[in-house]
Structures are given as C-alpha cells and as structure tokens.
Image (cartoon, rainbow, N blue to C red; front, top):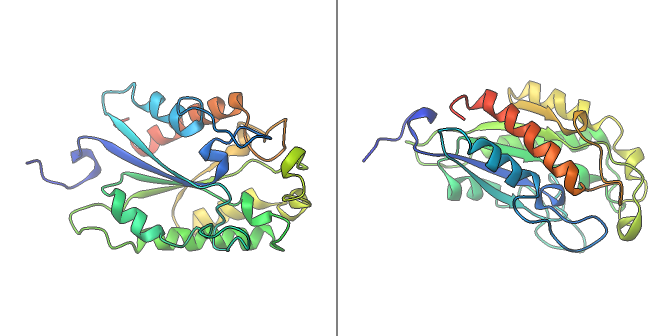
Length: 225
C-alpha cells in the first residue's frame, strides 16, 4: 500500500469547496440548480482533470451559509458548526477552497466588511485545528472573495435589502485576512460580476468563467494539476 506523505504522493488530489449558494449553483430567481458541469466547482474539476494528475472536487455548498453567524429562520447555516468534522470526513485533502461572505449581509444581519472578513479568519482557524489523522497533510487553503453584491432584484430582494452598501470593501478585507493567515487568495470579482438577473448569485456563463479562472489559479498551488 502506498504510504501517505507529501501531496505529490497521493494518487488523486481531493479539493473541498466549502461555500454557499453561489457555488451550490442556484439558478438566479429560481429554487433550481445548475448541473454539475455548469456550476463553477464542476467546471474547475473538468479543467483540472485534463492533466495527468486526477482531481476530485468535493462540493460542500449550502444555500444561506454564513461565515460564523446563525440564520434566525433556517438552522445549520453557521459555517463554523461542524466544519472541523467535515475536514476529517473528507481527508486527505490537498486543498480547501473557502468561498463565503455574501450571506453575512442579509437584511437581518447588521455586519460590515471587516466583521465578515473576521468570520473568514475564524473559518481558516477551524480548518487548521481539525483533528485529521497524523499521516495526512494539513491542506492548503484558498480564500475566494465573492464578486461585489449588486442591488438585489427579484424574489431575493427583501432578503438582501441594503447588502450592496453593507458589503463595501469586502474583497480587500478578506484579502488582508488571507495574507495575515498565509492563505492563497483569489478575488472572484476580477473575472466576473454577480448575476444580471438577481444581482447576488452567478449566471451560467459566469460560473464557466469563474471555474476556468480558479482552475488556472489552483494549478499554481498544486503544480501536478
């Protein structure tokens, strides 16, 4: 049996995407979901799997997930709850991609960009203290800042009323936390805006653009891909 050691010793890279509805792939202004090969984690897997090193993307994406706060109407949306166990369950992991923050600005929360970024920092700490088996590596962490929230439209407008104002500066606040915590950082807003339909999520073409861009970035983290 092949011993477990450095990332390059594994037969397959496993990448955990820990995120919310932007990555779950909700079709804007519906309760439906894009197919796996249409949502950005699936696009990323397909792009990376073209290399000689096989890649498996594990999607842990929950609609409404916050960084560290509870949803008063739906249980289980606090991103810290159970995170360490998810890292254990899916180990060995080469990389964890954290793509959170948007839901911290729902109308029932009075948060600012700095507070949301601190929530991302708490997520990073939880990932690194997970009680994984000693022969398995502590995974690399890629923090993805969501694209700038626009004024919400359609069915979700009341839920995200004022979010575009509260979230000002979020990408830079998250970048600072990623730098301080020695994590990789990617700003999704540099390659795509949010949905033209609802102003918060991602349209199908935006998923494709983002998946390809993050796949290219991941290749620089995991050079065997």
